[in-house]
Length: 407
Image 1 (cartoon, rainbow, N blue to C red):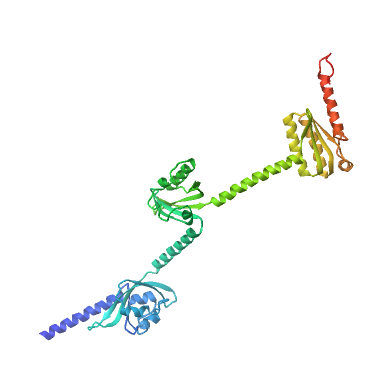
Image 2: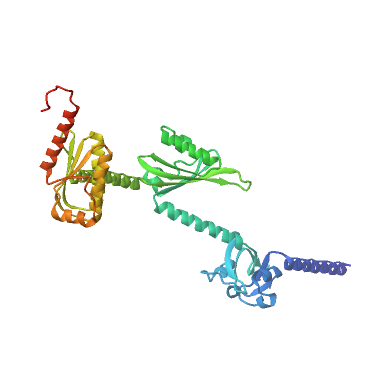
């Protein structure tokens, strides 16, 4: 009776062991068992699917040779003496050459005397998770490089405008500690004390409502350029804003210096233009413009603008172009001078050309320009006398009968 019971129990144990073996083979978790010499003693179907090696190919081979751990050749051997239950994530090369990351849990196998006779490891594929974490790590490294190197602040707020992230080299330069703003409300940290800050608040409010924004502000004694980008959840609802704030103080100061220099240059150029085209009121109602040197087209255009503006402003009766000091004109310039005299006439004044030199006269003749309706005189004195005589005649003609002649 006892023998029969023992036999039945033995059969049941064998059946349970067989079922366990089949379950292990069918499990979705890779199961590998190896002995003290690192030779693989068990290899289930999931290990074959995961790593590409069949049971026959794996059994008897050293686990550290079939599945070497990059940078740590003794990793598998250490498990023989390690009771640490924490998982190990190792990357291995599959039989087809592809890479797979496996999270291994292990347990040491002991005999009845408590001596280690092997290690059983259980693993599942975490390649996707590892790649995701690696991507996040790379992004964190890129973000860290940017915030450590560039004069920028990267920040984020939740839907209530509470800071959840605030880092950057520019923040440190402004005296802001790394976690100083975390947990604080952006509208309270930067209160709208002026129109500029009020506009910054409006831009952030619009970003929280879903509209990307851009603004310029000046706080902490520095100038900043800000970008606000709404962040949405899977339903498309805004749950926060990511911001990039660039310290543009140096650029702003350089711009102001350039503007100051450009204003100075413009004033200097205006002085030079005024000196190069000095319009002089030599008599009541008589303007003269003495020109010296070589007169080109650009200078003539400038002269035309200045003289016509002066004639209109002073309501002059005569405008004398004194060419006594002009040594040379190009063909286009000679035509401009004639047009200038005619333009003066359209303003109700008389244009007079004085002091034409022989070479300038030859240029005008060669062009075939008609000067019949233009008064030309030998020098400035003759031109001024002409103006005085003309004005005297006009006053005499307009004086009432019997009035004494004008002096």
